[in-house]
Amino acid sequence: RLRAAARAFGGAAWGVWASLLFWLLAPTFWALAVAMPTPERAWRVARVGARALLRGAGLPLAVRGLEHLPPADRPAVLVCNHASYLDGLVLVAALPRPCAFVAKHELAGQRIAGTFLRRLGALFVERVDRRRSVEDAQQLAAAVRAGQSLLVFPEGTFGREPGVLPFHLGAFMAAVDAGAPVVPLVLRGTREVLSFPHWWPRRAPLAVEVGAPLPAAGDDFAAAVRLRDAARAWIVRRFEAG
Image (cartoon, rainbow, N blue to C red; front, side, top):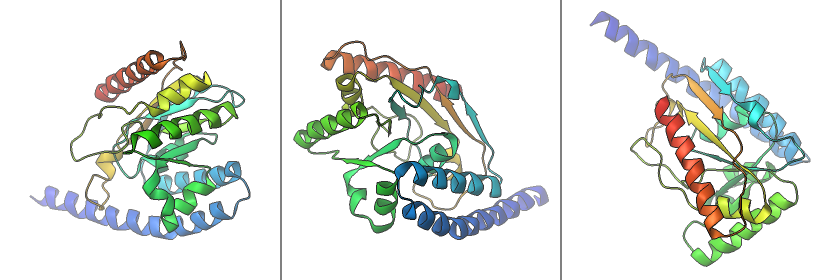
């Protein structure tokens, strides 16, 4: 009982420290990133802040497979499982070069999150209106053709239960349209640190793994479906492998 009580007290104390550290660091790095003249510089500032937060909180982050990222002059569509509100911060900490987050349209109007995401070069898409979704996929493809790599959570959301939800097709249609590879990523540990719907953090190891690029073989709807299925199969396999 004493050991359990000590562990509970230690966990609560760590949660207080991690929360305090976030509220100390986040406003500073938010302001610095928003003040940057380009998304590339904003990403570098945000990455320093994200890594400082994880180190200061004692959350180890293991990153594997960065060699699979295409060269900076070859844009790609990066797709990742979505498990927690912490996911974006961990990906910024893990990835060494900028990508444009693809975020739900509802975030665009938010003063804090929307402003920050826009400075990082984020693109906002509609999740419900199918006609608008097709237009958004064309917008994403145009961004990739212009040389911008995208970072997408193709599940579109996350829920109470662990596991990987079905993938929306938009990111894969954009990759096929632009002739760009899809790079699958898997996140582990973020749900354990910050689980929905709770906001009180817990300590757990974090990991990001980057898979080999999946080429866009074809330029039609069937090619997008094949890309989606291949990316999800890899992410599910690596996620369940732990």
